[in-house]
Length: 353
Ligand code: UT7
Image (cartoon, rainbow, N blue to C red; front, side):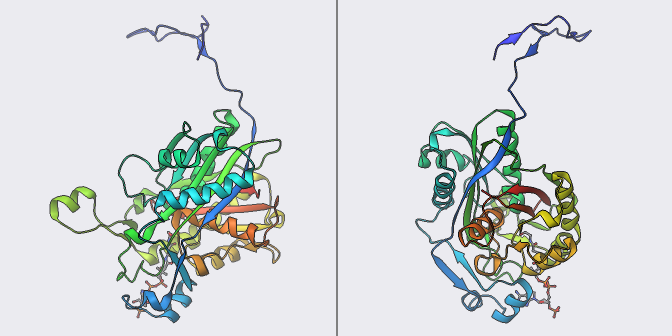
């Protein structure tokens, strides 16, 4: 980066003096960014509630009534890894965006179930899809991860850091779920969703409203740290959840966040074509829709019924489905909202690709 020396920037009065006191050349900034394509991958194996209840002390009726889930997809032992599923979803998004993989400057994978502490999943995905030299890293914001990724990608494109970024939300939660845990076994599922964010003539991604509440860090969490697992021989650390606490937070805390995202984008519920919240629980989706007073013609994503709760993958998977099945219009406005472990959340209004 060339450094233009400018005498007008004062050096600190004491301590070591910097070599140069000039300004840095910077990126163009102020470009528009939009989601240009989305893709999804659902594992082949469909598991119904009765199969879940073969080991879980529950019933098909209870699961349907309390969560809205009827079936979910569970990844196979081989061939449907976090990377495999990401690749399939990414290919769909890239195809819809109509770009070459080499044009992708950055790959962000949002996941909490990539089974390696390091390296991240994203560099391997980069090689798989032919974006070999793209910057590539993972982020951990659980069910809010995809909407966090869209924020980062949008800002990168708008600033001029990259022309195109790939955002993937992917989970193999079955690897981190105790099939006998009544609080999680029927909810969590596997899958991947992806989006290409790129430069655009018009604005396609509204301002993000996001945040966290670390005081409730433990209400959805890996049961034990890797260190405790090793030192106390605790067994595989599955993810546990204080369901009711999370439920109340989601129902009462997230509708105001969604409203703020609408305000920030300068639109109202009447302008929306679709509402795509994290697919956590059908009752949470219904309660949020009611609080937002969504008009009847706003399509509400209810992918959870046959996809389950796929954490970071749930918003892009639901988006991909609404478009593929023609339920939401291409080019329409959608309010998307992710929330979950951290606690963390992020919402934005987007124009559907
Ligand atoms: O993705 C990240 C964000 N996650 C979420 O947003 C999830 C939020 N939480 C939830 O979706 C709900 O809390 C659950 C679906 C996990 C649980 O539903 P709930 O309505 O909150 O159930 P509960 O824990 O209040 O339990 C209600 C009753 C209890 O029985 P009693 O005391 O009323 O007799 C439980 O013992 O249901 C019983 N119960 C079950 N029964 C059958 C709890 N879990 C089960 C089960 N099967 N799996």
